[in-house]
Image 1 (cartoon, rainbow, N blue to C red):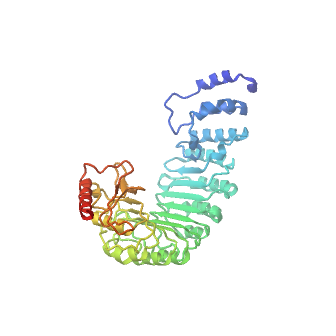
Image 2 (cartoon, helix red, strand yellow):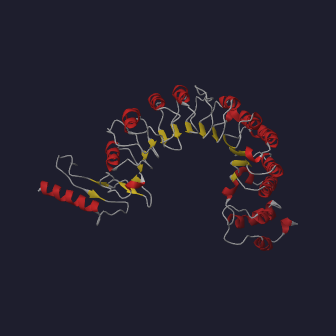
Length: 454
């Protein structure tokens, strides 16, 4: 009967179910959606209306905050698959949140997630698990759910993020998470562990992840259990945000020996006053022995100062393309030569309070490939010409400078092929120097050059 209803009548019915404007960007009009899934013909007639309301990116990441919404999403995806539609194929990531929920609420969420997983979403590649053991997370419920579902889904999961709060040291609490890593270890490409305790079982599971391309350890308590020789020969990205005073210097040295394709390294502390868990000598070995390392981030690391710059980062960083020294407040100017950072494309200096205009000019003069500079706030009022940024343009309201093609100010030292001194001023990209202090300085240089050529 539904197949023979007049489309105009159907549309009037659907219009009664359209939610009032403005539509919340993360909302799904469940009542309207359910009616459109009665059959494929109804969905075909309603699709133009749905396209004007639904942000289909909402299906990419299933993050809804209560079990009722999760169950309705599960029903929608199941009905769409039954009708030969492809909404279940839009799912890219799923979140299993066992934080601040009681056991009965978690069981309802688990049932919804189980129903979605049984649809075998072919593009599901990322799984996020949030667990709070202080809230009494039902580990006995979570463990069998994860293992049962992932046994059928394991070929698709490539990335996982485990975030654990509370007492995570108990072996009983860790068992379901260890099993989860072990099940998907053979094809796992990226893993992030947040607020996590690495016991011997977790480390053993990580050793099985031999295909890893990225590992992110965010405030983990490793208790010196990280392997001295990391078993990840294909690793490309290593991130470590320090928790406490645990030392991983030997692990970093091991990266240089066993992870020869590493191209990005991040080390962060909460404050420059914290004793760094990674020694500067380990970073020197990393820069020296990894030919493919292109990206380096050292955030709030106390020993990143003028000596570190002169003795380690400049002489050993010739291959680096992106350097981020956020919050390294002891950093100051050292002699920068063109052979030091010839490949540098971006440099971030947010929170580097001792960096001045001379430092910025030295980088611009010595690094012809640099395209983006993110400078500390205290340089917001500094003269553009004093910093040597004539070929750069600043973004509004932030101290980020980007090189603009064709924006260049030639000084009296520039010459044409005949050997004569040439003065040329080209301003593009909508920026005007007229009326500013930098314009007056440039005009003085122009007048001096013109007087020499007469």
